[in-house]
Image 1 (tube, helix red, strand yellow):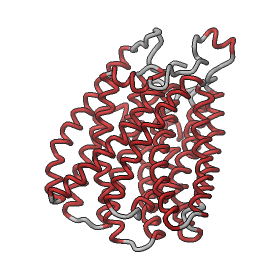
Image 2 (cartoon, one colour; image 1 turned 180 degrees about the vertical axis):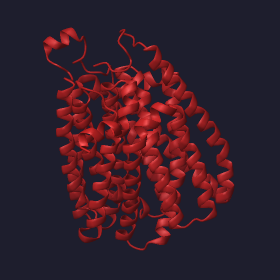
Image 3 (cartoon, one colour; image 1 turned 120 degrees about the horizontal axis):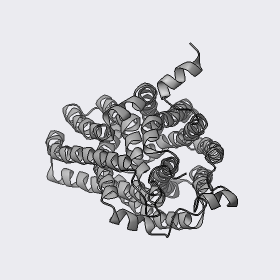
Image 4 (tube, helix red, strand yellow; image 1 turned 45 degrees about the horizontal axis):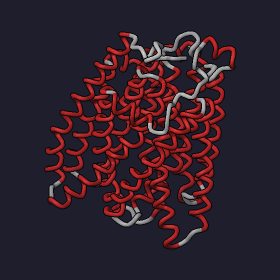
Length: 442
């Protein structure tokens, strides 16, 4: 059977969607490929930073970084059209990898330790921003119904890129060391920018003057000010609900991440072994995610809806805490993190990004960026504080697992409520203030 006859059955794309779908997936391939080249390096620096207390402070540093970045990003969005600021964010990220390569190569001793900590904070801020910008751009191009069908396949492009990045890191981490891989990541990000330019051409993003006259405001900057993201976020119960979901997610993720740092630091003696462990976990996560995205995501989301898909994550997280309470070994940690992250990337992430297809354009960029960076990292900070509180109280892993159950119940209720609200907004063809559909505005 020919590939072209099989692919539509797997992906469920309709006539006219192929080019945009392909460039979106290919762009995400290169972006996540670059990120998964540097992610193990970031995690190794976090694990070797000097103990749990120092790592907790890195989470607070990351939160402070989001406070600095969001107004700058809001100002950029308010002054430049989409076809300019979306690639600009990717270019800036690629250039910064080259700078960090120089710092981590030529600095030694205490200065290098601080450069590594700054890299951890920097990567933790900008990896969220770059992914948020990418998915905000797609939420601006695709309608709600399309997102449920196609975001899984676009995510597959990123997953395959993550697999490629993981393979590169596993192969080269011990041979050449982690730091030179920053140059590989920079090249991959630049390739992603080229694909974004092609995607913008397919959808005629920020078209010329004549077309803008017939599609009023399409070429104008989508933002209205440096702090517009926070203002829009604070006024929208729907966005507040999304933020609550993300906050609960990140608090749970931070507990697991800090447990991961402790277990890995105790299990592996050298930086190369720790980096390889993280890279192997990333590789398996991406393989499982790819299989799910290829065969299931595009069918599950339209069939069950966004709410039940989102609700799966709190259930998996609670089960993971009980598993680690029963056996706190590197093997159990590996299994818990792989299954949880595969669930997140294959089902929950596409569902969460589809939530933004029914909000106005400015919210897709500025408010979404605020949620995906500041709210996300606020959850990290809260998780770090809670981790210290649990340690201070001497609460056992099993005791914490039981304590997390009511949190998971609230989280599930929030997820189901978001799904119903998104369905209502999409079904009603909710209008933005200028009377345009809140889904695909292009």
